[in-house]
Amino acid sequence: MWRGYGQLVSGGEPVAIGFCEADLTTLAKDSCFEGPEMVSYESGPIPEILDFFEGELDAGKHVETTHRLSKFVLLYKNKHFEEEQEYRCYCGGTFSSRDRRFGQFSEVGGEFRKVFRLSLGEDKIFEGLKNPLGIKRILIGPKANQSKIERYLKHYFAMHKCMPPETDVSKIPFV
Image (tube, rainbow, N blue to C red; front, side):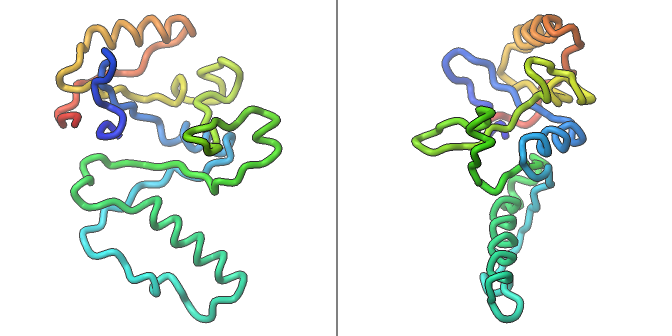
């Protein structure tokens, strides 16, 4: 996701965060998300909309077809992005009283968005996970200050009494 989030902005250092798939599965269930699922990188044309409809479109079939179509939109990317090998977690977009009660939402641009939590307990970054905050690896942008990022990670994770994730400099330029 460095194309969207890895740019050098306001003095920051560009990084891409590599999460542990098993930890993301645990965190997704806790936050009422689905996934992670691997993005499909197709080189062919987008399937015809009619391919999503099988038989008569009754009420149940409408819901199933809508779910299949939205999943396709969420998990399809052009072949040119295949080097990313991206996984995605997603939710149905529903907003319940439980979300409001437990503060599991955020307002972004006037819309309510469900929060994906990176820990299972209040400030317990390791609880129930294989890696702290589910972070397996940090990929550092080619032009970033590697020692600065590694110092930050060392101090942040030491504060929580655990080892920082491994770091590596990306060979793919962050754009």
